[in-house]
Every structure is written in structure tokens, then in C-alpha cells.
Amino acid sequence: MQPMAGQMGYFTRAVYNNKIIEINSIKEKDINPKQGFKHFGKIKTDYMIVYGSIQGPAKRQLLITVPLRVSKKQIKKNYEFLELR
Image 1 (cartoon, rainbow, N blue to C red):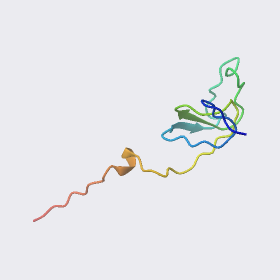
Image 2 (image 1 turned 120 degrees about the vertical axis):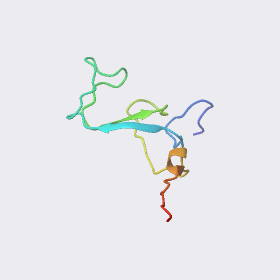
Image 3 (image 1 turned 180 degrees about the horizontal axis):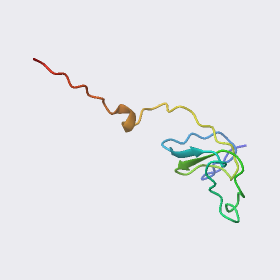
């Protein structure tokens, strides 16, 4: 089956530069609204908040891997100060 233009369906897609904002347990910090989240319901287990769009429908599994490309934050240099006498 060939995915149509604009659709991110069930097939594997690579999305870069999404930032993880928070990883927490629902027991430590309850983030549920009274009615639950629209098209999702109430969160009952551990959760992760991601900045950026995620393809696919709600409740779709998300595979997170170590970044293949380094970001600018990873490139920042740590300078050491040496005192010469």
C-alpha cells in the first residue's frame, strides 16, 4: 500500500528535531484535565511531553532513538582555563 501525499499513516517515518520537554510519572505529577484529553482520554501511566508535531493518530506508538546528527547544544565547547606562570 502506497501512502498518499500529506499522510503519515502506519508506515515508518523519520522526524527530526523534536525536543523532549518532560518525562514523568502520573503518580508524581497529574496533568489530566477533568474530562481527559480530546481524542485521547485520561493518562494512566508514565508520560513524555514532546515539543513538535508527531505523525499518526492519537495513541500510536512512538519510537525514540539517539540522535544521528549532533545538535548545536551538543557541539558547545567546554573551555578549560589554564593559568600560566
